Length: 118
Image 1 (cartoon, one colour):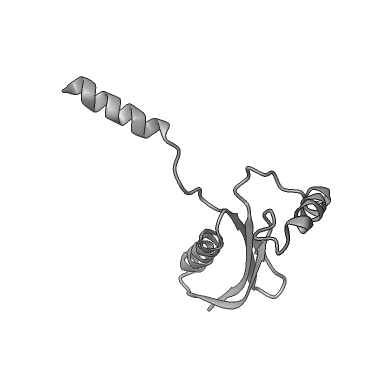
Image 2: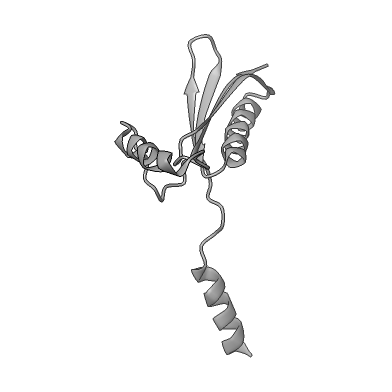
């Protein structure tokens, strides 16, 4: 029984998680506002990461956060090209871009949130 339990736990530990935590940066602004920049494999993860940082930043000040702007950008490889002949051109443009992200990176979405603590 213990061997089966050990084998099951070992298998679970070897399987990577389906989602990864977003990378979030907090940037204080001159006017007392803040900006978060989050990168994640999905737009929702990036948004949730930014909002969590905003909430915790203001909670530390015993205030609440008020979002004044959200900007979302897809940074990953092209999706659903209209025409197969465009695929080569799109891939070339993607690889030649100055900020070419890794194809196996988990930073396809970028979400920027502007907020204040009130």
